[in-house]
Amino acid sequence: MSRRTRAAVAGLIGVAAAALAVEAVVRLGWISPLIIAPPSSLPGAFGKLWVEGFVVQPFALTIGQAFAATSAAALAGIPCGYLLWRRPTLGTAYEPWIGAAFAAPTILLFPLFLVLFGRTYATTIFVGFLAAVIPVVLKTREAFLGVPRVLLDVGRSLRLSEAALVRRIAFPAAVPGIFTGLRLALIYALVNIIGMEFLIDFGGLGRIVSEMYFRYEIPGMYAAIFLIVAVSWTFLAALARLETWLRPR
Amino acid sequence: MLAVENITKRFATPEGTISALEGVALDVPKGRFVALIGPSGCGKSTLFNIIGGLVDDYAGRVLIDGHPIDGTHHDVGMVFQEESTFPWLTTVENVAFPLDVTGVPKAERLERARRLLALVGLEGFENRFPAELSGGMRQRTAIARTLAFEPKLLLMDEPFGALDEQTRLLLGDQVLRIHRELEQTTLLITHSITEAVQLADQVIVMTYRPGRVKRVVEIDLPRPRTSEIVSSPEFGRLVATIWNDLREEASLGMKDIELHARAGH
Ligand SMILES: Nc1ncnc2c1ncn2[C@@H]1O[C@H](COP(=O)(O)OP(=O)(O)OP(=O)(O)O)[C@@H](O)[C@H]1O
Ligand SMILES: [Mg+2]
Image 1 (spheres, chains in turn purple, orange):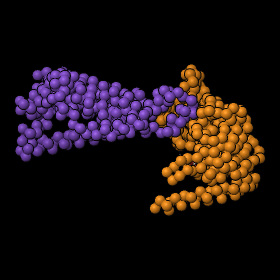
Image 2 (cartoon, each protein chain N blue to C red):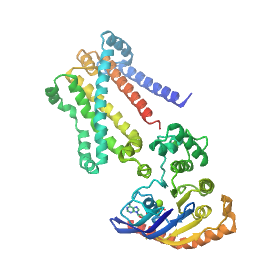
Image 3 (tube, rainbow over the protein chains, first blue to last red):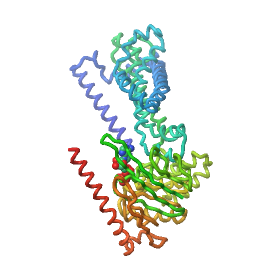
Image 4 (tube, rainbow over the protein chains, first blue to last red):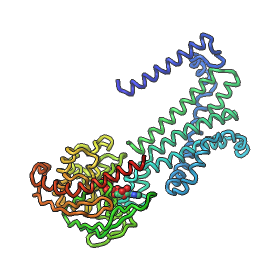
């Protein structure tokens, strides 16, 4: 068995053991099934979600919004982070502010966004974008700062133009760090979008969780939460692909 | 080929001005292999960066073929002291990099890169990534990459500084072969006396802070040489001569370090 398969098997065994433990705890009546759905009820609940049309479309909606928010965060954040590196004065001036904004729960400003954009995808995507762009900016700057000086010196000694220096050396050297930012961005975007969908009962999987919650369909709620995990898993796998494509090592 | 005239370089530090180089002058005629040796901290890398055109605000002049340089120069190839291969490129892509940026067509640059990899003894490792190579192999990749654009002057800053003595002797053989095959004008910076004597036509000994040229030793050992030369009596005599010069300087450096260590605690 390869190390990867062994790791995958070990992971599955762990998850199965945890599911069994939860099942036992609920069956023994230590925790009410109204709080935690027994894992054995999930396949059925999933089937029910499917029949109601609560799987494919909400999944696609949530993944689409997360994609839009993360892409926008990348498009805006990577150039910003780059600029904060290229202009050290700007970097030193703004890094602490952006770092502080990272801790701010921007989602709590949702009434403002509702006023601005209404109960639309613009609101959910904007909330996701706002949370996602900050780690992209910070990690991009960090990634460029971490590029070993000697690699840039090699480029200089080869008389590369400033633009070529960035494109051929600084950027590829910074790719792993930038992707750390993108992974964080995706997670922040997703959490905030789901939260927003839940709060305003709108959109994809967050709305389904909310719906199940208000119907007291606890297994359905957990099944929807599993779908959210599947969204983030799909997305992270796609990011990993993109990263190896951009930088095989 | 290369003439360094009266170079002086000072650094402003919080503890005051450090005079790294003071009136350094040297010549590297075409086709010659010159080694520059000095204790750690004597300003070797500073001089390397000045000759390579990566540092300005120094006093004095660097001339290539009689023309003073202003910034980097297309006839000067640099091999850095630190690890400098690009980790995202394979060995052959690393070596082809300088040709890529100057627009040499792909087939031709890969062909030239393969030849250079063979020259530095890395045949069969073309498609490995730097992370899969040893430190010595990575430095040889860096040397091949610098040779790729056929600089008239090869500048190397302790390329094998981080390696053990045995490996260094064997890599020295490869450097000798490169020098012989390409008749490459070379300035090698090193802190290893054996390496300097094994490879060079001339060894320049530097003083410790401020870095000055203390003595120039001609190495009249016959060429072609191999690492076997280290066991010859002439070799021993030359090493002893240089060590005599260097010992004083190195101990000055040591004292400085101890002083700093004490001041720091
Ligand atoms: N950017 C800098 N700012 C301040 N001081 C510097 C700077 N670069 C080098 N120095 C100082 O100049 C002196 C010479 O440094 P340099 O790196 O040239 O030494 P070196 O001979 O290459 O040493 P080593 O053999 O350890 O590589 C050192 O004392 C160092 O502290
Ligand atoms: Mg040095």
